[in-house]
Length: 109
Image (cartoon, rainbow, N blue to C red):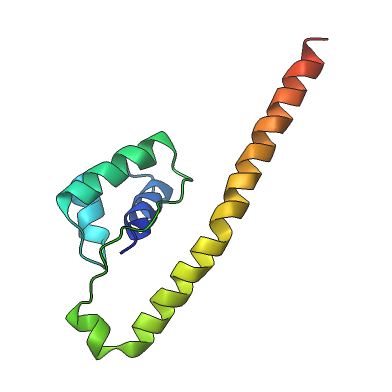
């Protein structure tokens, strides 16, 4: 199970100008999540809102998943795309850091 849906809820709240909290995030979640997962993910999100959260190793199936196979396919496709994008985001962050270091070096010359 991916915790990315918690990060997505926090990002949505932030875009609306609201400070993400446990209660607000829990009210926005479409997938069930434990309070522990919400707390840990919210802490990580506050440190780095653009971070990708790695999936948990506990697969779960809800009654909604069984009743709606299209939703399962969409969720699987989204998870696959997120996994493909994660290294690109990491590389982008590394390049941004390198650019910032180069700018700083130029300014100190």
